Image 1 (cartoon, rainbow, N blue to C red):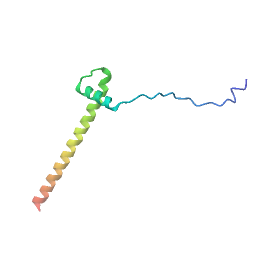
Image 2: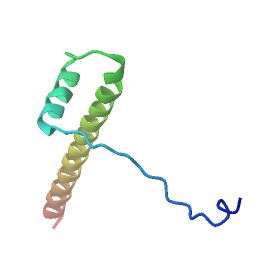
Image 3: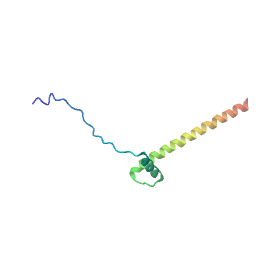
Image 4: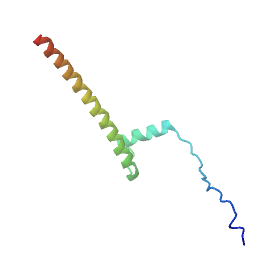
Length: 82
């Protein structure tokens, strides 16, 4: 009758079984997704995220080029005015 009152609660256990992850296989899969060779609804999200990453890289490169060009232009104007 009093066993439930004084029983120590044990923490819940998490039974996680790890899986093998192959980085090379994942990269090949992502390349197929980008090329449109794998076309499923599940892969749409992966393809979308890859395109967003590519766009961020190209935008960053474009901005970097613009800053460099403006710096060169400012340097040339400074040299011409002095």
